[in-house]
Image 1: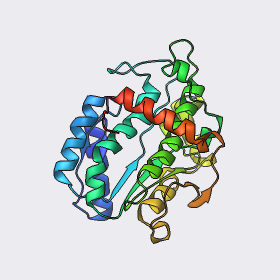
Image 2: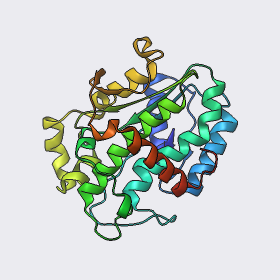
Image 3: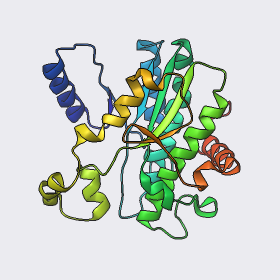
Length: 250
């Protein structure tokens, strides 16, 4: 389990151990907005688990004001897309070593409103928080499809999903409402457990064994946006992502 806050991460591990009785949990502190931290975490994971069967990329942030990471990348782009992109690449050897392995990328239905602003990828000329978020969610789907194509012939599959509108802190950040509204949101929207169901389905169900390069909603195949299915756009974003993460062999 990866988490930015060591205290919150350890608390989550304790909760899971109490509810499942499993001791097979390793907390690793990692800020997905830091490429240095991602490389360190990936090294720890590969050392502890040289055969990795499932990778679920679920981190996400929404920032109403523009900010940049230590790598000089706009925060939403860094955490929501480049972080999972880099982590996945650094763990591909362990995933391939496992034989049948699965990569699950949590996207969002707002990918349909996304546009990859290649001329202003970091929002330096103009920053719109919603547009920046939608850009990253489209990027999640584009990345999934391109990676699936590049992994053809291997035993590693990669799929993405819309989890539903989930009543979490992210939803409050997205809406701009005070955090107190989470009480109301819990009545209007699904909770984290339900929101995780499609991720768990893709990570564990025998129904999707060998299935790759698909987009899911409510544990069923769905159609993503026309832009997300543009092969040229997928490849262009891939190349830019390699450049922004310093990957030379991708």
